[in-house]
Amino acid sequence: MSKTAGAAPAGAATSPHGAAIDACLRGAIERKDVPGAVALVTDRERVLYRGAFGVADVATGRPLTPDALFRIASMTKPITSLALMQLVEQGRLGLDDPAARYLPDLAGLKVVESFDAATGACRLRPASRPPTVRQFLTHTSGLAYPFTSEVWRDFTPRAGEAYPFGGPLLFDPGERWHYSTSTDVVGRLVEVLSGQALEDYFQAHIFAPLGMNDTSYNVPEAKGARLAAQQQRAGSRMDGAVELQNPQLGLTIAAPIGGGGLASTADDYGRFMRMWLGGGELEGTRVLSAETVALMGQNHIGAISVPAQRSALPRSADFAFIADGRDKWGLGFLITVDQVAGKRSPGSLSWSGINNTYFWIDPVRGIGGVIMMQYLPFADVRALAVYDAFERAAYRLVSVGR
Image 1 (tube, rainbow, N blue to C red):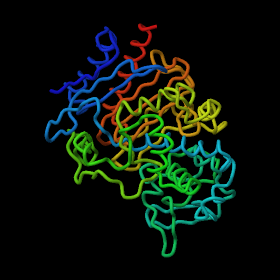
Image 2 (spheres, rainbow, N blue to C red; image 1 turned 90 degrees about the vertical axis):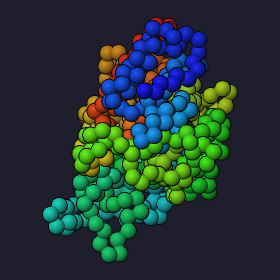
Image 3 (cartoon, rainbow, N blue to C red; image 1 turned 135 degrees about the vertical axis):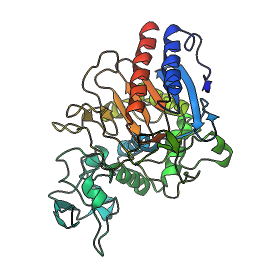
Image 4 (cartoon, one colour; image 1 turned 90 degrees about the horizontal axis):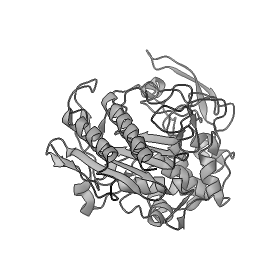
């Protein structure tokens, strides 16, 4: 069994509560709950804890190290949202502009009026209003994913129909929240308005300024050995032992999208979180104004709430980590509304990636945490239990240190 702990500030990893995080993560590996995890806790100034446990590849037993690279999937979304808000700050577009003003493919969107699962027959009608930039940032556009919608899973376009972001709208824009390809639209807006490919824009305006030197869509060959293998639970219901996926993803992403695809490390994502806790600034470099950071952390869906999502495909379990019907959404983040004893504060921001990578940012307490695993299904009950135990241990660490 492999365990590697990276260097941490004096006393962090050796304190009783730092050791408690070690024990929490090591125990999950020894019980074979998860194959491996890298975790990090940071405050506004420094890393408080980092540790790496278990293996990066269940077939070879290659150990995870603190600098391991993970495909962070939808943890790309907050970065894409930040990029677009940089352009909003520059006056290049407005949050309530119709997105079709910049992306003509979005003109004339249709809404599903009825869908027959047995025959695939689908009746569409024109959307009652054009979706706005804000609605794509908040997953209230009407789009979906095949794994969050049985309609999208089973829908087949008719001859001549084209859906550049995956399918027809499930509802009129602004009516409700549904997890979706909306951030892919946000990514295209960044590309069109900046004139740069996403990889280039992110590197120039986010990653290089923040020193996120290990974050990219395309992983350099020299770093390939640090990339965690793509893995999944065995069986048609994905409830067995963890095994390798076949085939494995390569080092390059042919067509990067705003909704996912980045590779990163716990340290790099920790720098992103520390920038956020610093109001848009890290180590003297500002990438976003404090006012915009605050704006992005506010509720932008009004009386609508975020419901727990039922999965339509085995690659994801149900989204049981959401406080069903109570959580809200900002510009790129889930917003926690309730205080749960021993965990994050109300107003905390968070999201996750389909390979069981998770983070939260708590502006009230001034800390953030990230834990990276690399296997399907998403929201696996054992992965969620490790995430919960890690978060609780992180707050015990912070409480002792203050």
